[in-house]
Length: 316
Image 1 (cartoon, rainbow, N blue to C red):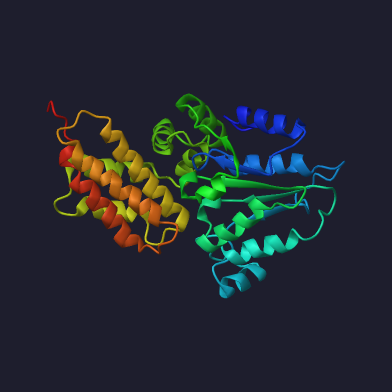
Image 2 (image 1 turned 30 degrees about the vertical axis):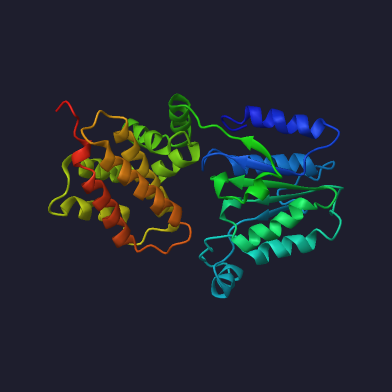
């Protein structure tokens, strides 16, 4: 059992033991707290029949990012690396709904996992709503959501919510020592601060070696960057061709670094607040925008440089 899942499991098992289990569940919490792992384990409990708890159960259907286009689909079919779409599309929901016209394969229940449900395209979300309104008997939906507010209110209203809390710094440090024993204390501390209670994010920061990126961001906040030298250093550390996961991690790291400055006694917090708001905007755009890595690094650096004066303590 992953850290912090105890209450979610108690609620899920009470529901399974009840006479009438709700058909739609919203698994809400920060990215990286283990919601997808919970969803799969819970689905296996739901559909288990005798020894049929196989790794790929025929009555568990997973919906996530598909290949971006036909070209990427061919790459997947050939076993080559392929690029994923940035959202979950209506065709995927339609394909799932066509399955719902048949009976489950091994028992009388099936589970549909959508991860992440908050990246459903609008048409896909509207199509899913119809299934949630009139679910076939024995069909249960588990919607993984990092930002539940992005879901249609009508979808949220039809789901029972399971909330997944963040993890304490001490638990995170113990976990990182077990999972990433090569990471030194400074790296773990930076990862824990940036991840804001998400074990998955913390391990991602360690694996991506983002400690030096965090320090470069702090350097800009501390000193400004009148000659653009520090911004160049930051761009080099981010990399010339970062993948989508690294870009997301860098944006979340920048937000965390700026949020930590908001807790300090600053002369003018308005610049920090404005910088944080802009980083939130960029993070929200990241799943659907095709950012140029170099330009994004410079934009992050410029936001940090503009906030540098506000980072000075009011007491000098």
